Length: 287
Image (cartoon, rainbow, N blue to C red):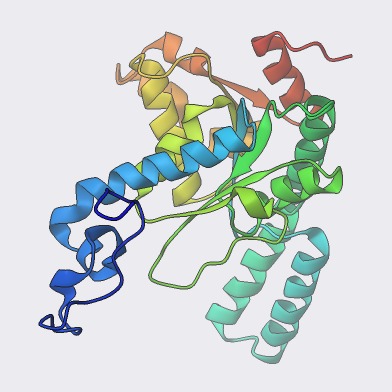
């Protein structure tokens, strides 16, 4: 009936209205208006709500967050990178930059075993928990390459749902091809992205990584330490790596954290061990 409110925006302009004026565009259709600084609270709210509604529609009940370096590729690719770096270094034996590049490539090759481990973890958890139409313990990553790709890939190996929470950055970043298309998200705000990582999380599994991995890890540990988050088990894969990277005992010795804070995380050396820790913590039967 004419004159009644409608969700459909008015598209026709009266004769006296300048069609080039943005003032006549309804607020929800004015994309330029929505980008104004004053509209940040609205954008934040939308970024919280949109993924939440989609998760509900997809039946996602719980998740396992997997973090790790975007630079750790599968062994075959890392072997090729080593070959190229060493070939270039051999041509310039006095170029320290090229020698260092070859050394770094060799060390990254040794870390590439974690790619296969993350893929196995994604496959193991997804094949165990996504049965009979259930969407429990769904693997969620940052949606990028490297370890993130591996975990998503493992879930895709068994035709399970898997989530990618990408972030809009100054340089181009695309989601890896193994994320379930209807569960591939892009965020503008890191804060909202972090919130969605933990809203449904039953566990956080951290593989070797850099700043991004450390950021997410310490944020979660802080939330657990302060009681802002509960019922999330943190598993660090590769004890040797983590203990060399972070001197936990030094923090305790100087009274900067409590000895009990060391119980906020656990170590695992294999995908199976990581899953067993998570399953035991959450009371999930392994058979």
